[in-house]
Structures are given as structure tokens and as C-alpha cells.
Image 1 (cartoon, helix red, strand yellow):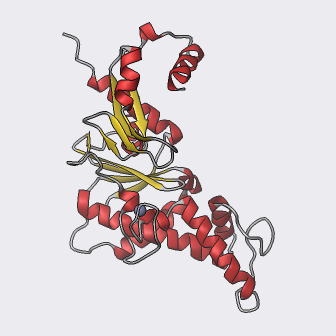
Image 2 (image 1 turned 90 degrees about the vertical axis):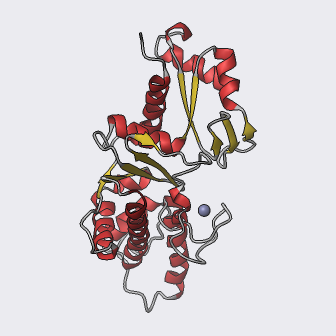
Image 3 (image 1 turned 180 degrees about the horizontal axis):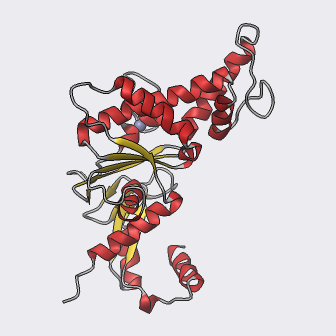
Length: 284
Ligand SMILES: [Zn+2]
């Protein structure tokens, strides 16, 4: 299937394999970068222990660079997006989960086991909500689009039961409508729906806690917020910054700038391609 996709892409670009110098591949992890192997791609059913680098490199006869998708997206923003010029950068991709990548001294941080920067599984609540990864209280159970919807549906039940005691609802498509997506929760919060505002603000608060922890671990110049939730723009940035300033230490003024990513879903593709280029031997 990957081979067919590559052929279709080459056709679309009116190009052929002879003009390709290498392949950059960004996939969900965990990975073994040394072995070029996907250990377990949680969102790709059946993708366990797949030697993906060899599987592509052998038939194509081209060098293949494998990278975790969160890392590739961070590298994309670093070389061509909102992290341009930042040698120390963290990117949080807020979608169905929370993906992440950490750039230290202009290079992707991989760690000893190749799985550094799994910041979506940073524990922000001790004994908190269970996560499919096996831990409890992971960031992505509180600050991802899925988490916001889950939380909102939870409060919708509360809303039904406590309609008489809750403040009147004005947000959403109609008064009292139950938001079904994170965008609808953001919309409701903006229009003054108290419960939507509470759910949204909580997600921003946990994200700010993560940013404080990130600041202490990596001391980045900038933390970029990417993914579906970042489409909320200032609705996301403003409360995260407010909570960050309230919760961060007061011993130093080295707080990172919180900004929106620029490249959207192209970040991983651009990052993977840049990594493939960078891995080529420089011309003599
Ligand atoms: Zn987790």
C-alpha cells in the first residue's frame, strides 16, 4: 500500500523515482530508530514490530530516514515554521491525543531508548484518569480534543441532572445544546456557556502545568501549540499563558514564549523530508 501511495504521489508531482534522493518517514511510535522498526503504532491496527525502514529502502533502493511523527512535526516547525531560529523548541500537537517533539541545540531529542518527548504521557494528575498507555493522569487525558469532548459529555450529564441549579446556558448552536466536538466547546466557552468555559479552562490549566514542567526539563525558548485545538487561536493561547504565569516559578524570568504552530498537518511531512535531506552525504 505504501508503494502504491508513493507511486501516486510521484504521479501527482509529475515526477519519478529517479529524481528522488531519499525518503523521510514519520510514523507514530514507539519506534526503534536504530533498527528502523515500528514497535507498536497504537493508531495503526496490526502495526506491531514492523521493520519499516528495510521494507521501504530495499524495493526503492533509496535511503529511508524513520522518525516519530511528533518529532518530525517539531523539526518541521524548527526548519520552516513558527520555530524558525529557535535552537531550543518544544511542539505540542493537540489532537485526538497529545503528540510532542523536543528540539535541543537544534537537534531532535531522542533519548537512550529513542522514545524521549512523549509529553502527552507526562503525568499531570497523580492517580488521575486512566490512559490506554497504562498510566494514570496523562496530559492527553486532560488537554487533547478527545479529552475535552469526553469531559464535556460528562458535564452534559451533570447539566441534565442539575439544570435547575446550573447557571443558564447560552453557548453552542442553541441554548443548552450539548457540544459534540472540542470546537463546539470552545465556541460555547467564547459565548459565555459556563460549563463549556469550565471544561475549556481546565484543559488550558493542565496544558499550562505541562508547560511549566517542560520549562523546567528543557528550558526552551518557545513552546508551540499545534494540532486541531490550536485552531482556537487566542481562545487557547490566552488562558494557557494566564495559567502559566500563575503557576510558574518566581525564581527566574526564563518562561518560554507560548505561540501557535504555523505548518498545520504539513509539519510532519516537511520535517521528515528535511531530515531525509540532512541525512544525505554532503556533496564533495
Ligand atoms: Zn498515557
